[in-house]
Amino acid sequence: MLNKSSLIKPDLNTKFRVDLDWWKSQDQNWRHALVTFMCPTHQALFAQSTDAQEMDLVNPETGEVTRGDGLIQTLVDHCAKQEGFITANAPLVDSVFKVFIVNHNQPLNAIELSERIGRPADTILRTIGGSRVYKGIRPV
Image (cartoon, rainbow, N blue to C red; front, side):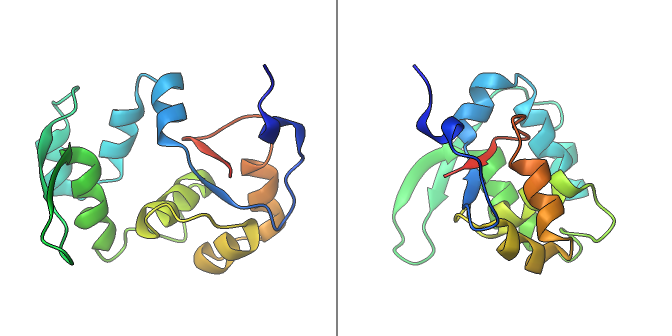
């Protein structure tokens, strides 16, 4: 069965996001890729772990406690908030991916991504809008 989104050619206004479930199913090394985006302290902590480490996650607004993946939560709640998390000289796909982390994976189009990383929108679209999927970044 064909995926509906695979039949549509993305344009500058097409929204993208990270499809983490898709990425997990396609890449055995997805956790390692996330570790490389962590701050040095957390890289050392999570580098040896290959399995999801469930931990209590507390919603700062509601106080609700849930269980979730400690690596992902640490990346989002701590590492992504560090100065220099997104840098001008990083590879394009890494920069785009990091924008989604900082933005809590809210859908963005190539123009919006361009504004955040300072790269041309058409270059971003050619990279993430093609047939190859990088780090789970797919059209919504």
